Every structure is written in C-alpha cells, then in structure tokens.
Image (cartoon, rainbow, N blue to C red; front, top):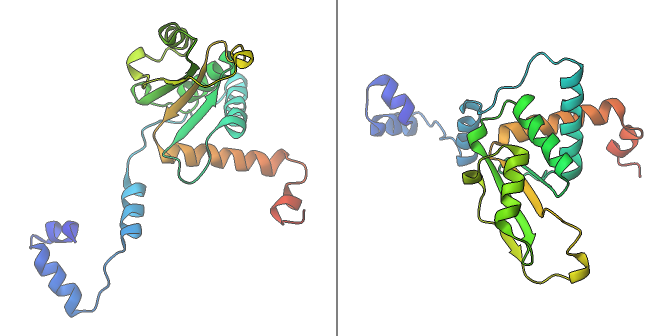
Length: 194
C-alpha cells in the first residue's frame, strides 16, 4: 500500500479507503515477505562459464554440501560443518570461485574442546580458508567431553556460513539435479515405494 500511495502521490489512508470501498483484499504477511524476498538482489554472482576444473569443483562443493550441509527450511542460508581441512578448503573455494560469494559476508564458527588453544585453531582456519579473523564468531568450547575423543578433531570443527537463502536454494537445486541425473533408485525413492 505504501508503494502504491507513493507512486500515485496520495496518502496511505486514501489507498486503504479505496481498497475497502472496492472490497480489495490486502496481501498476507507471507505474500508480502515472499515478494520482498524475490525482489532482493543477489549477494553472489554464479560463474557462468565452467571449464573442466570448475565443473569438478562445482560437483565437489555440491556433494560436500549434500553430505555435510544444513538443509532444512529453517536455515538462513549456507551452513557447512566439517573438521577435515581438505573438505573445508574445497568447500570455501567452491563458494568463492563457483558461487562468487561476497568474501566479507562469510562467517566461521569454531567448535572445539576446552583442552585446545582456540587462538591457534582460529589462526589455522584463517590461514586455510583466507577468511579474516574478524569474520569468526565467538567459538563454541565444549568442556564435557571424553578424553579419548579429544584427538578426533585435531583442528576443531568449523561451520562455514553464508546468510543468503537464495544461494541455499541454488545449491539445493544443484543437489536435486544431481540426484535426478545420477542416483540409482531415485524414481523409487521419489514415489515412496520403499
């Protein structure tokens, strides 16, 4: 209504009166939020032309997210969690080179044990990902853990986050494309025959 009033150069009250008089329904909150979301400009720029290396990097990134990414509808965007430096490095490279994310919007959450040095771990992940230290959120330090498991995550675990639901939808779309093209039994699973 505000948009209509602005375009016509009238007050919102005039628009409300006109809508009531002509029995025009207002948009629901959900409809309004959906329109705002669709109009929002992208915060990333997908690489359009992919060579063989880029195709492989895209496939690796999509598979990593399929396996280790947060995929529920409640997600605010990309959230990839892993403790393996090679996997994390590959996923960050996928985000930067294939998805064209804005570097400044990347966030990292370190998850580690209380017997580990958080500063050294953050330095390690900063050097590996080339994501500045200032983009790391407050680490989650676990105090209740079994000593025999403390060697499982030598470098801790990190969540690589990028708050953009449109990018999440894009990656999820790539996952579905892969499933349809390559997965054995996809038709059976989709038809709930199991």
